[in-house]
Structures are given as C-alpha cells and as structure tokens.
Amino acid sequence: MPAVVIRPVRSDEFEALGDLTVAAYAALEGGRELGDYADTLRDVADRARHEVVLVAVDGGELLGGVTFVPHPADPYAEDLREGEVGIRMLAVRPAAQGRGVGRALVVACVERGRAQGALGVALHSTPWMPAAHRLYTALGFRRAPERDLFDVPDVPLLSFLLHLGTAGGPATVRTPHGADDEAASGDAPVGGTAPASRAPAAVPPCQLRPRYPSAREPGWRNR
Image (cartoon, rainbow, N blue to C red; front, side, top):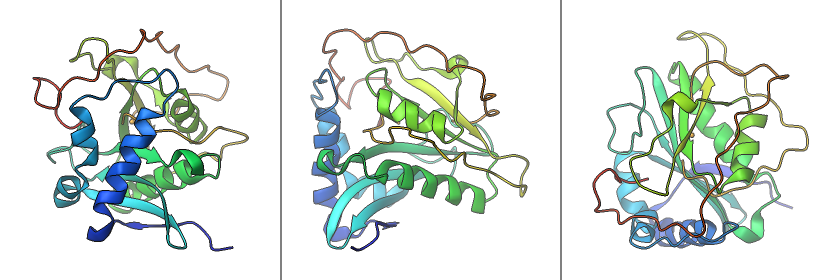
C-alpha cells in the first residue's frame, strides 16, 4: 500500500483541494454556516501564489492540505510575531480522517519552519475544532489565550504556539500517544511548550451554528 506523501500542491489540484477544504470545514461537529468564507477556502490558487500550500496524497488520492506561512509580513499571516511562521487552513478529507494525515501535514509545516530558522510556529483555531486542538497539544503546542482573536462576533480564534528554540537551535515535535489527529483547522502557535502535567486551557463553549462572516467583512481576511 503506498505511503502518504506530503508535497507542494500542483496547479491541477487547486480545485480539488478547495472542494476538499470546504467539505472538511462543513463536516465539523455542530456544523458551521460558511457563507462567503467558503469562497476563501476554495481559493487555493490565491493561497499558492502567496504562501506554500502542501497536500497529502496516497497514490493518486488527495487526502488533505494545509497552508504554510513563512513570514509575518505575508498576506496570509495571522498575528505572527517576528521570527514566527504560521499554519493556516488545515483540512483532511472526512473519509480519510483517523489515518494520521493531519499530523503529517502539521509536522511538515513545523519542519519547514525549523529549516528556515524560525523561533516558533503560530496558529489559530475555532472552539468547534476539538480534534485539531488535541493534535496540536499532542505535538507540543500550547494554548496562548493572551493571543486569542475576537475580531468577528461568534467566531473566536484560539491561539496555539509551538516554541522552536533559539534561531538555528534544535526544535522538537512531541510524538502523540493515542491523540485524535484529524480536523479542519481554522488555523495555530509559539511561546514555550506547556509542561506535560499542565492541562490545556479550557476551550470556551461555542454557540449554536454561528455564521462565518463574509470574507469581505472588516477583520476577516483569509481566515
């Protein structure tokens, strides 16, 4: 059986990855009305023009994708600080969840950050993505409530950070043990890794079917 391969997206996969990403977000437990944000999720071509879009493939099957943001000044950067790289729009095909695809995509982003000498990895996620939160915590990310974003009513963005050490220094990714590694991630973190004995910060309860705002609304740029 072919192994899952992580590589940059090809132009002939833009449409398929866009549809996959929308399907993954729409399938989240509790169901969120994507509205015009679905158009943003589908626009893989724009993301690939500005950032590094990676895909997970198994043979000829597209299983998932993620956007790696290399610099704080990039168009898709979301509250990145100096020395940080970002992860955006992680999505795994619903039928492929439970196979380690999400973990492989996140680890690929972390390794890219490490290779370019980043000090940390930052991302944001929404309260209705608990599977993604478990994955991030298992990989060593910590919650950073002080960097949560509340630009859009009913869509809080929870910050997660992964510390990669000093520039050029070693960086480690914690190996998860039994973690549920699948999700469509809103998006994720830097700062230090929380001690193993410390429980992650509580995730605020989400309201019933909040609407994702239009991509054209103020404060909602490419989430």
